[in-house]
Image (cartoon, rainbow, N blue to C red; front, side, top):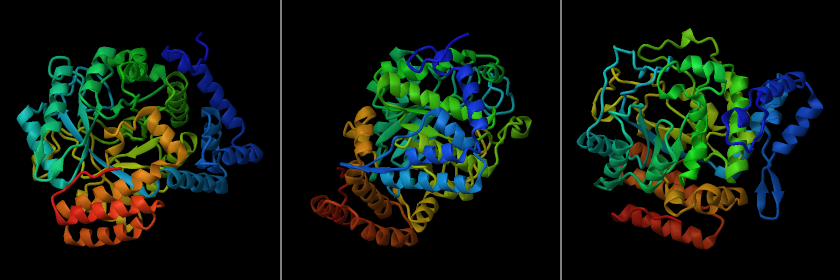
Length: 482
């Protein structure tokens, strides 16, 4: 039987079933150990140091104790500390993005995904480069600057050459004042060589959800196709980093397997990346299983309720304080709003999960990957964020200034990220308000920007930001950044 080794490059050793089971036993035994829980919470809390604030984070075992804890006042304390951490390192900024589905052709047999090969009811589509241009212009006309590309795994319909050509097309489109400044990519596990090609194409983050870390369940849930290879899939992030991609995004599909097992595996994966590559995941996503064509989530008996879901989010934030956290339109407005105060730092807006969905006036359902719960327009989401005290940010400056991987993490850990990210958020929000927002959203936004400008600590940076914002309002000059 394999032994746990965080630095191993073998999936069964860095995501070790024996270690996860021992962790869950330890967490269950200590879930009401108030002395231990208080010590773990104290470790997680942001502390002052010479440079500002720092967080130590938590191990997968410590965080699992908190997740198992059933003491109401301790759960509330977890949520409060999670919010403290989020505000300390990300401020009240919420980064905006949208998914762009290129193709739903797929050769895998994943039983929870409507793209699976045997589904004969879903409408199969693959966008041509001209259709991609139309989709991107529609997204730019909403105000989006950051996309996450999605495609099924199909070496004939969706080879790496198609993905690379699509990225090139997306970056080439400049429509009015619109431009996609960062393309993140969520495609199947691939080779080091292909990851190098994605890096050379200028992608931002490479995203790959594990779906489940429970190997036996994984093999049952992925009965056919290349994704059936658990080890190859689980070791993909190591190959991506070997290929030069230093921003990677993890995630599990909560509801497939018991959530405490998934939680421990997810944090072990983050610890592994930190131990081997010197930098943990850039983002962690928290999707929950949702209804879709040919898929009934009630067929899976590991679903989690909203309170458990929010507790998971808070515990992840305590464990990996410097990692961005993403919640999608799978979740309702209510759940997304509550999650924002527990550590979420990125959300999608006005998402369409169908291939070619953005150019359709009515939301198409025939090629959707999952039902969208939050169906508001981007303008409505932006106004809602501002009215609840958040700054919607369309910023992509860190990636384009080379602040990725360990450079981003060191900036974040030192607290210096607030000196550039806060004004960058306000400048990109100004772009959105001037170019795309309704008058009502503009009124809310400009009032918020005026107030938030005063929070910039450096007088020189504040003066430059104010001048740049005036230039955005009064001219076609765009894309200022610190």
